[in-house]
Length: 64
Image 1 (cartoon, rainbow, N blue to C red):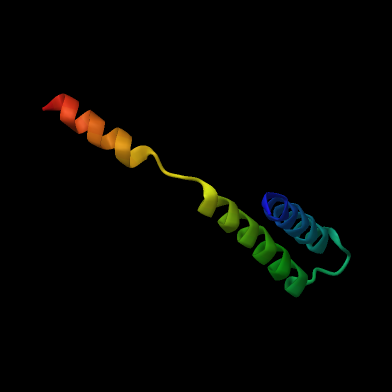
Image 2 (cartoon, one colour):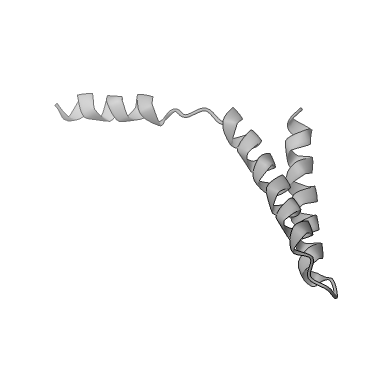
């Protein structure tokens, strides 16, 4: 499942670059590529856990 996210990012970026470098700029292909790129980035960011909340509360208690 993790590889699907990376595949979405790679395919989305390649499609977006291809649509810009082609002879006729295709806006729909660019939008589709950017959408795939954003979906891949969103799916990866959902799996990253945040440990900042625990670190922030420890810093506050040390200062008091």
